[in-house]
Length: 223
Image (cartoon, rainbow, N blue to C red; front, side):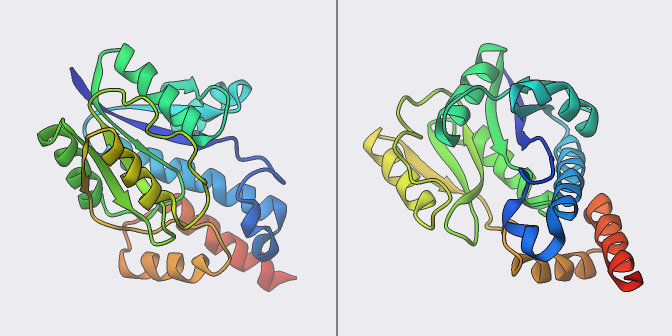
């Protein structure tokens, strides 16, 4: 078995990507930021030194997202986020990967040490579910060494109870939960200030996101 990271990514299309950021950035600006997030998240995943696959949505965007991330890509499949995550794990396990760590593209400034820590936990605790808590009540990563039927079913996604519900489901399945270091997603306009602070603190972080925010600021200044 070979460890792998699956990067869950949605096509960065105006009006469909990062829609909660549209009030702050406009539809085109939000989509451009989504593209930068995917590029930076892919670079971060590649830096971990394991196999990386993009899990693309919708299916017809697989080629687009493979090119954007410069990584092999597979379609996520249908259903809610839980169904697509379960399918992603099943697909990667069937290809001989394990443990598998799924991450999203909403945390471009995630410290590489956090990603390495999550991978190490997944490797050393194959009997457990690895979850990286996010500040909004969800999680920035989930790691498994085998499929766990029902783990992601009937969860109220995009709510503050996602982490707690998933941990409860793991307990019902008789699985331990180990937590990776916490981080935060960028979903709401209020999150942009924290994103800019992350970039100020770490000059090496998220080069695509950094350049895009600078370009948007310049554009606004010219209006």
